Image (cartoon, rainbow, N blue to C red; front, side, top):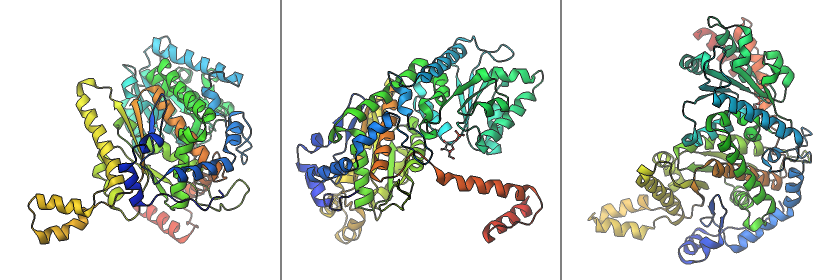
Length: 527
Ligand code: F6P
């Protein structure tokens, strides 16, 4: 990042431009087939955008995009290519991909037709995905987002955490004869997933009349580590491979998406992939000034690096998009939460912000106070669909839309003191009270947001949306000169958990830091 001379608009100029410049919204919005990206409520003018676009050019973004799509090993710390885009490409650049998708579609089709049954001949009605992080968040987010498309008679569960209470509740609610367990783990070495899978296998085998041979009717795996999956007891036929060039957090497009295909059907899953392909083509072939993920990324750069804002909120106006926030937390924060650059040096600039948020309108009654009147601003992505899936309740969708638009407007325009005073006067409040209350009721405005307006939350539009965020994250990683595709930062905690567990299970005196020793001692006392 080489341009120190980038400034956004002042609050006053921004509000003035938003109110008065008739071309602002059309100049600062991009429409694609799958969504409208309105970024006019940002602290920008044409000059700011020009300078930001130069940052992308100077980072050789175009070359990096081509390097990613063509399979260069841009994940240099793991010596891997980054090719999740190949999974959804119309012409698959890698032959094995088609074979795995065919196998997956064949399997899913057989479950849906009833040809593939449980060991006792009963139809499979329940899908349990066992996986964590990238082997969980994308798939559960997509299934939940596409709830209206879930096939009748399909019940789904996602088990990620090692919380015994949660596993036990799920197991109590399902019928083992009708359940398919999917062990999704790229490494097949993740302790949470293996612990849950082992407990579930034991639970399954404990049922009367069940023997080891029945495992093959109920357990499948998605993994890059076929040997380990086989060693666990999964029939080799039941293993759907993935590859080292698919990062976990980018793996919903691979066979990790089997839980999605099982839940919403093959055609809808293909539409989901199709939406992502459209986003890939848009990202690869559109000039940066009209390129949704690039512009999203640059706006993020503006606030992170030129305003020093460390957080970014995502607020979808749809309960079905509730899990999008968790999903983006992993995709963004595991990708760009880095402080060492591609050259092995401490980054010269701030990198990935904290991604957080919640569903509107519910969160308007929670954290929006902070967004409107907190001491610093947080840029927000508002995401909303025009049409719902419930035509009989369309008036509620209109109210949802009105709220979404109202919030971005309130953040941007605010409400000045004069207006507040005039309103209070009109309401008959006495002068002295008005004087003391007006300051509290004033909104300074000038707070930035994007609005992503979808015609409807369909599988294709969801695919487009998710892939757009992936490319935004990629673009920021390139500009910050970091590797967005490794995740060394999650390793230390895993190693330490392995060293703490024996102390928890045994009687040895804890020999860690003083805080950990105290906590271990108390755990013993309370046990
Ligand atoms: O702990 C982080 C992580 O490595 C993620 O990147 C990954 O998605 C997750 O764990 C699960 O890994 P696996 O699919 O190998 O079980």
